[in-house]
Image (cartoon, rainbow, N blue to C red; front, side, top):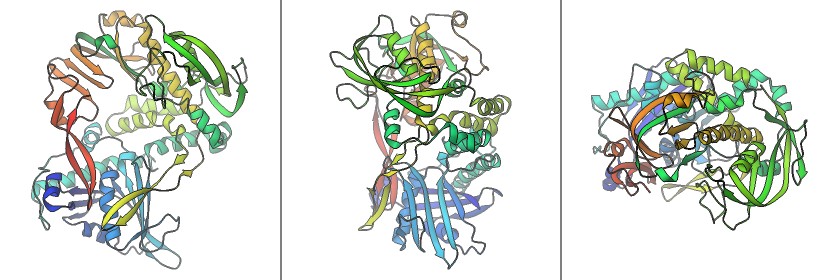
Length: 565
């Protein structure tokens, strides 16, 4: 019994008048039948529907899109109506449990509303954003659904008892219908886990076989996992300093066709099995060809080379900056063998000391069947099936890097308000972080080495993309592998007449007179006001960003002045 639900809640301006926030509209739709189960102006009606006597004792599973926003309204109602939070696995009647991380990630809420001697009735609430990590508007468009995201006046004052007008009814019904149709397609492909990452891992295990999986990816000791995790790093995003803030002409754009899936395939050698510890410098070992090396050194970038190193948890250096030098500081680095080779190729290294490391057996082709299957679907289908294939391709590697250390946030009810306190750290079995470390290392290696080949023309890179100038597309094709279909090749995205890059993930392109603006955290309204002239560090917009703020009754979206810093 699976459903989609949506709340519409009062605005920040109404909160300033009322002193609390609340739900003014709620809709629930059955995913399978697309039957509208509930349309109301009161959150009480949602729980009356959710707790309707279920004689078959089947758990109702309800999906909200962005549970981090809707969840606080649910928890406030539960506390207010006599429910108690429990950390126990077995819930008593009128108890609920939560899975919320101390980093603010909401996974689920489980409610026991009726318990009998041998059975109980539950409602389990999940976050569909973990299944389809994109906006409802983008889901409707990418799945090519007939129903599309609408709009209403969010700032309108709606008093208690406010009756929904036809436009508001149509708006919230469209929201639940979009999610019901998209989730129906997803569930129809057997992708029924709590997150898309879990769906990907489950599908991979099914192909490989659980017995083979356990043999190839043993559960590592958590101390070893913590040591190996130091080598797990993200994508390479870099702006060549000489282009920062300048308007440049004729910018060529290239994107890798499925970067991470491409480096998971043959002939890339990937780690398996229990690691072997070694002291000092790694020595060639044909049985254990891959390794993670811990070193101490100083370094200076070589002439006309791109930087590859960031230093985290070191107050002397900005953690987001790729360094051209460590100055006079001798620093510690944890590098996969792929990253180490890249590091030595790009930097002059001084006072180098090889401390210790772990070496691994290697394997090729382990992901080939999985990647080939989903890449075939991606290339030969459209709409929802294609979008799901992309998600399955891009969400497997990260599951290997799941951190086994988890600190839950526990909701409490104090003086009529919900507060969240950190619980005791929970340590679970690690997945297999060296796999995530090597996949991301191969991906960075591909992007950085390609950018280095085109050093004189390179402007900007973001994980799987490059921006180039002062070169023709035909000349690029002679230097790198360009193909708009082939897995792992560089797809040509076209030329922009003008471009302006301020910093990583903050740039503007003009293509055929149409502006493409990339600024993390900037709302659509804020983007609408940007021009090439005002696009600079220090740019401010009062309509540019919203920030969720916990208040009495739930959450409000508060408008903030957005500044490009």
